[in-house]
Image (cartoon, rainbow, N blue to C red; front, top):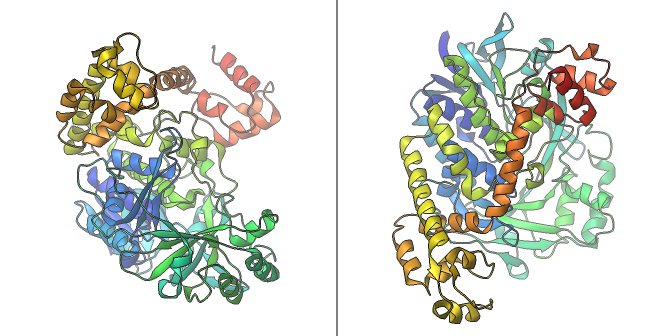
Length: 624
């Protein structure tokens, strides 16, 4: 049988779900192919969304009209804002989610999305004609034609799981691996490699002594992931717990190192440096006498717990014996051990910034197949691949986000410009414009852009414009309202900040670190009256206003720097040079410029090994 679609998405993980939803909601007739419809958007590792920099990506996905933030809010069982002790550029939302309900909610959204069909099967072969992908064949014998194909296969391509010396082929526990696609892409000139990730043991909560552990409770304020105006966290909220390994734990773990796939040569691929296994921790940090472990619930009612910080591929008996030395886990029983998994990925420098292959037209890549790790990084790539796959079918300029516009822009630019030599994980330190890329302002950065291409709906835009109007009016009031010392000094002294000797504008007081807009409103009736005009999302609007006022100098300075560097992003060089003939460039520069073929001078400047003098040579050749 033969079926025709605009866009086909292979894989229904976090990248595939966002890609399929975006393409369909833009109007493309879309097909999502998945091995198991009961595992859509499966949280293969930790049952949580967000975290440092990752939370910002989820807010960006939401601002663009994606669904990860909405699903997380609807299935959250604990919410926290991380890095509150630092400035707002570092604040990052994180939420524990009910693993099963998260998947069920995603499936419900996809099944009720217009233009979107789902097919449960294995993709076995790409249909390629004249250097362009034209469809997909599946194991059941059906052929699906398409104008664009997005591959989001996660860890399933030639997946191999390791439990000590035991090896099991599979893309995830109890799920088969996929074969054939990597080999076909290799034959067409696309290079691949192998990476490794892992997941911890799962514990039976009935056998855990929580009374001797530290409680890590959540927050119940106004913060959430989605900018849409609905009440978050409808599920019962649950605590997480903290405990520690000890020297006895480490001694047992060391006994298992000869049988560890990471140290006996069984695993040859590279794992994530920033999420190391417990065996890597005891080797790398041999002087440490303990390591922190987080006991995280997997759902609203389940007894299953995730042991964050104990990722391992050690033999089963070593894992269990080591666990029983941990405070609170002396009598623990497990549902299954931790394991490592190796899988195929494709060098992302073979992609354009719209995530289309440079080698095979109409073929897009997103998620772990690009060498990244994390649900959030996958979802960010997925929504961008879905948008651009749709544009590829119907015409228009590629939709690309700059580094000063989003963490998603930083992520994709890093991938296609620098490539990866380990699983890529997003951090705030990777973004040079952190103060512009805050979690509170993703809607201001991206919602209008998404609306203009047809993805973000009108109601989302109107919510943002309403919020913006409130912020603008409040900032104008605070900038212009004058206040006298006799009116406010008693309040200032009560809040341990210097009294006024003369009148000033209210903005001068808001800028003081000890004072807040909400607090000042209790002493200034006119300000209280202004705040009462905000009927919806009051706390969110006040917080966003306060950040813009208190950090205005930093924001303006970073904006100026970004604007200056945009000049390099506007100088197009792709296709204008044969770099191998420019002998004034260093040998490394010639090789890397030829391989990556950057689109702009700005992108060329970020390629590792390209020096400022190499960039100056290119500028001279461009007549600059």
